[in-house]
Amino acid sequence: MNQRSASANYRNFVSVILLNYLPTEQAQWDSFLKKQREIYAQFLKEMIIQPGIAKANLGFIREDVTLEDHPLNPNPDSRWNTYFKDNEVLLQVDKDVRRLYPDMAFFQRPTDYPCLLIMDPQNEFETLRRRVEQTTLKSQTVAHNRSGVTNVSSPRKTTSANEYEVLPNGCEAHWEVVERILFIYAKLNPGIAYVQGMNEIVGPVYYTFATDPNTEWKEHAEADTFFCFTNLMSEIRDNFIKSLDDSQCGISYKMEKVYSTLKDKDMDLYLKLQEQNIKPQFFAFRWLTLLLSQEFLLPDVIRIWDSLFSDIGRFDFLILVCCAMLILIRDQLLAGDFTTNMRLLQTVGSFRKAARWEVSLCPISKDQVGDFTVQKHQYLDYPISDVDLILKKAKELQDSA
Image (cartoon, rainbow, N blue to C red; front, top):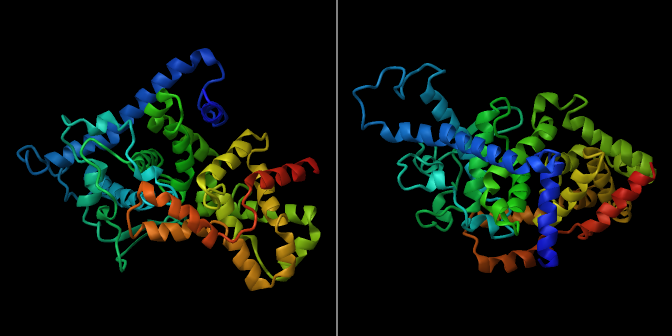
């Protein structure tokens, strides 16, 4: 095994342990993984395949249809009402995952291990792909924000499946696998369902499994990612619930903690930002909520997460990483005015936003990856591109406490 493969394989084992997926006793791993993967397969049957079969049969078997089974049943607890509400969630998930990490072609490529339950030609049912194509809301934008409000609007230009290369029958892109994971999560967690940004959390986890040198991890990347993502969300889900913002576990408290920590570590920089009325909400909200997954390219995000999940302080270390990002550009911030400093703080991740816009208008192919890499230097003005330098500074801040 070469060094790169060994490193990736090691990272995967570390990830599943640090995300509390595997039991501590190694002897139990095989039986545990088998059981979890079977549970996930059952989720697929109950939440995608069986409703899809019922929808596909609608109009062909009508003699036994009762009011309770009818799609026009006004009862809010009817299974069809649930089905149509699920479509609203699905549309938003679909919109977000199609543009996941546009700076690389990975998520647009077909997986080597498509889900056999979904792709089985013997199963005639409405897949998630078909639900998106056929839904009556397909010409509208559905957005579920952190306040729990669902907004439906007609944009000037809608995203359609035609903007992406159509894969042949029996194939599915990596983003479609991620879509399924998020849809199942939303179904199992109706209290929070799906909120924009969760796709940015699940993406690096899935990528780690799906690119592992071990074919078993690759083959079962979907199920294993689902459970790791669920465990991770159990730790950070409060960030996505607006009603908890001002509580001690909410995102507002964490943003203020970034500034209180900065005040302790670099008073001059803290006073400068206070003087210019630059609030942490202006930039740290995204940093903390999405664990910096939008601020750097995917390999760098995974490197940051390696340190984050392995630290005993876990998300306290994330606060220190955010402070390190500020302190490392303190000279520019101390010299800049409000406009310059706001631009500097908000350009972290600006390449990925620009790339998202481009990808929303055209397909991404393997040949285009190099072009996106070049564009990084045109869009990303944040002066620190070496994440190891940021992590080293965060560790120094931690040790000086």
